[in-house]
Structures are given as C-alpha cells and as structure tokens.
Image (cartoon, helix red, strand yellow):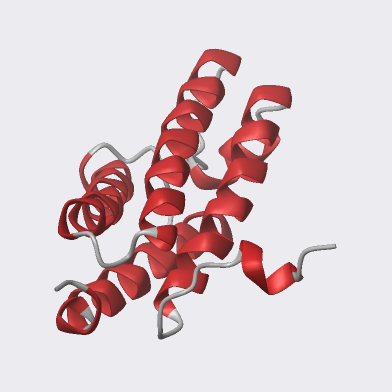
Length: 136
C-alpha cells in the first residue's frame, strides 16, 4: 500500500498544501452551488438581490475552474505559468467580490463575503511574497 504522503505535493514550503486544501474545499463549494442556492445567497446578500439556480451554478462552475487551476499549481508549484494562472484566479475572484460589493451592490459585507475576500487577499499576498521561493 502506498504511503499517503506520496499523494501530496512534494516541493518545499506550505503554500502548495494551502492551494491543495483550497482546491478540495472549492470543489465542495462547487458541488453545493449545483445543489442549492442557499450558500451562494450568503455571498450575494443585498436585500434586492435575487440569486437564481442559474446564477448559483455559474458561480459553481467558475469556482470549479479556479479549483482545477489551483490544484495543478499545487502539484507543479515551480512552474511559472501555473503559478501565475493560480495567482490570477485570486485576482479575478477578488475583483469580482469587490465589484459586487462596492460597485454593483449585490453583496454586503458580512460572514458570506468576508470568507472569500479574506481567503483571496491572504492567498494572493502569500503567493506574491513567495514567488522567488517557488518559481525557478
């Protein structure tokens, strides 16, 4: 039987494990977006905002795509192109969440929005600060 650690990314540092963890969690979020709108409504919580099943599934599809990119980056963290793609997934997510909050008014600051924003900001900062450690 194979050692369980052989399935984990094999480079130095913790960023790759963070990307792997977020990928797994994000796949779960994607699945729930296809099953119900309740979690998507937590993010897009302005009173006049209607979250439809289509909107929830679209959000889930983007989340799944970002998750796959981050998963590939976790296992190939020294590849500059994959590292940049993973970094861009956080830039796009952050731009989306901030615009929905501050420009379009469909999201309100609270528990539903704070989580994705904090994860995006933290991950983006971590990736930018660790570029030289991983990308060769």
